[in-house]
Amino acid sequence: MLIAARNEEDNIAATIEALLAQDYPAHLFEIIIVDDHSTDATASIITSYREQGIKLLQLNEERPLNSYKKKAITEAIGLATGELIVTTDADCSMNPFWLSTIISFYEKNDYYLVSAPVVYFDEKTMFEELQTLEFLYLIGLGAGMIGNTHPSTCNGANLAYRRDIFYELKGFQGIDQLASGDDELFLHKVAAKDPQKIGFCKSREATVYTSAKKNLASFISQRKRWASKSTHYKRKSIVVLGAIIWSFNVFICFSIITAFLNPFYWSVVYSCLAVKLIAELLFMVPMCRFADRLKLLWYLPLLSILHIFYLIFIGIAGNSGAYQWKGRTVR
View 1 (cartoon, rainbow, N blue to C red):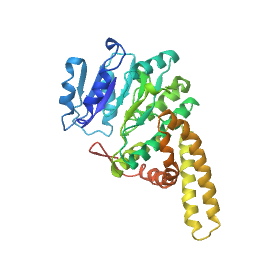
View 2: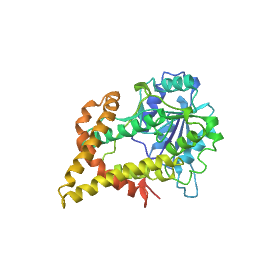
View 3: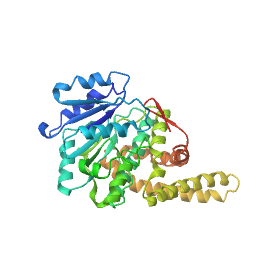
View 4: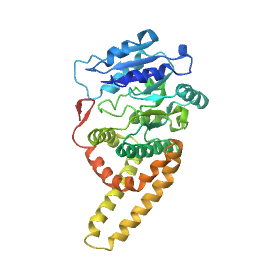
């Protein structure tokens, strides 16, 4: 199991405890954590678990990189000895059956890569609950596309892939100039080899839990980072699909503006919103049921409207300019 951590002193101990509590035989897995130039107590906390088998690898790059996380993962894989690489993040938690569930799914189906659910939890504000609902949409979209052998998205907080496949595909070569994409862009490299060798482990026991962003600024920064890799997708059909969705929301926004000048366009707005909301409701009901978050569906009408302006903004902002990530300015 691999984790790339930077300034995670508030979270890393709980994550390590969750990993050590896995019911999978301890002699069959190793835990490697890469400290990415942390300026807090992250490294010392990791070191305190040395006697329990936790391996610490510290990056010491003299030259600035634009992709420290990919470098961290590559170094960790070089140190790893196992057949299957399982990645998660330093601010995550999981139940004791997480690892065994993923490995069982992997062995049963002989996959190259396995994606699994990530869900926000312990929401304290309406803003965090809206994020949970929106994030479930993204996870569901990724699962559905994988199931239809058209993989588009996954999340590095809950991802597994064969070590030999990583090296066969030359790791992150060709995508290492981007700060983000250690998950999705590598997924696309595997999909180019054989999309049927990618699976989604739909199981509550395989779910990883993490926290939503506390404020709007950190949320926007995160989503700009995620959106920044979209134009680098190798499968142009996915780029075209994203462009169609973005254009549909632009059309709705344009129709709203036009409706103030010509009331006829309100019928167009209402029709588009109705189609959008019904489609999202049909999609989100099973997702919310899976995550035990059915009560969040009350937010769907509000989120559906907010999502129009959010997608337009993030589609532009995510592909232009710099953004902040882990205390660094990234382009």
